[in-house]
Length: 349
Image (cartoon, rainbow, N blue to C red):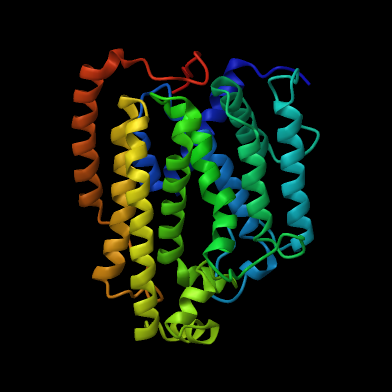
């Protein structure tokens, strides 16, 4: 294995930026409030998660009528896709192992796009000292979405089971980000709130995307909570077919939105544990994701008919306010000395 050169690494980060801009629009907008040195690392983390998620969405149960297969992915079996995830994990483990070259092994996959994303990710992990276990936890949860794996699950009996999934699909993402963002306390002290915020974002996605997830044969809401309001799979399928939200489903969603807001509230104090410079970006992300819940309510819970989207003008207004707040905070708190997992900053733009 040979080291990656600077040009190759810069191009890999540019690819990750393009992926984040195209697929994670709210997320990408929030990253614009970060420093130029932090953005590439955040883009790399996003691109990796997106790449794996796209593979998972190609699983057989994800191709029912009305669903879309991500571009560039041919029909394949769950076992083949699981093997692809295994190869990605193998490649990443080899790349972050002590003494490994800076460039991941290209012999494991023939996908140049995948190799580039892993190149940027490996550099980010090393540059910021991100614990590799967070990536193995993430991949474990992704396997829970794939038929043919021992971990497969497409229904969740209660919030405990859903939390097990979100530990990898959401909380782990927040923990990956912490060393990049920087904290004013030891990273371990900021981890519970970061995990809670990741779970809050994820639950918002589940509430917004319930119709699309049904098309893929999945329900990412706790069955016991739904049952308490008289909601079962048959009723959800009927709502999806008709595009109309039954009153029982509406009541269940209202309850789960309240649960989701409690998660945001529990995570909010943790934002103060982050480096002052990054707090506006994280507050912006939390505000904009929380606004999705308002859009669901304002649309009378029509989640089976349309996707709840925060209007662009509101996104820009929130981001502009956060930008001004960030400039003020940066001037007054620059000397606070946030803790970093690595003293080396990423100069790739």
